[in-house]
Length: 97
Image 1 (cartoon, rainbow, N blue to C red):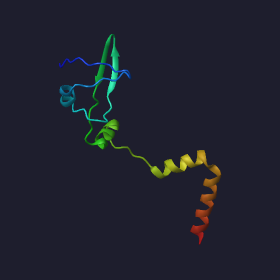
Image 2 (image 1 turned 135 degrees about the vertical axis):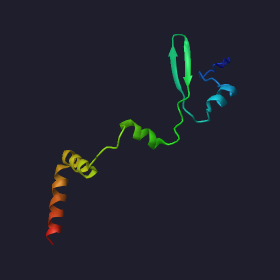
Image 3 (image 1 turned 60 degrees about the horizontal axis):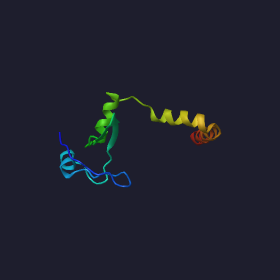
Image 4 (image 1 turned 180 degrees about the vertical axis):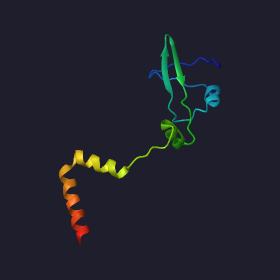
């Protein structure tokens, strides 16, 4: 465990020592997680995700069977019932032609 002393500025900012930044691969603009534990302040570097889609797929564990068209139609029924009725009538007219 690395232990360095840092100074708190007027704006309550601290500089992370280079040895810690390089060890944890912290770059300018990265966000850190700050926690308190008793009288301790803990700063954690979140894990860097190389492929975000892998993380999203692992949330569900398996592929989901989703009917996107049905979801859109159901949301339209709830939010725009009159527009959906007009659209359905227009589609029916076009199919009859």
